[in-house]
Length: 110
Image (cartoon, rainbow, N blue to C red; front, side, top):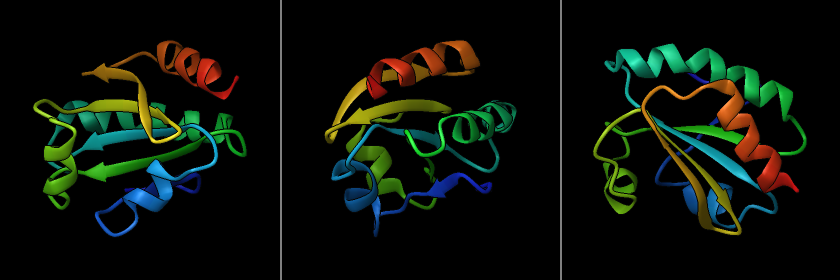
């Protein structure tokens, strides 16, 4: 699932890794059975490599972490959110272009 630069966020580490993170965090809400999620995965991997050291990038498996999915009212996947200071700054639904996601990360990273 996760590549070299993509972290796995779970109920155990979400608060520390995402909500209390120093800088921007991109969170990809996905599931193994979701074909659009699989199609988005290479884009997420590329963004993680491109923004390594500037932005934290990770995934939440919505099947394994239902409490997180419910907390953020994830009703469709893939959903990608960019958090800054524990707050959602950008939210994308469905397949999203690398350009749109990179733009949101550039804005969030300042």
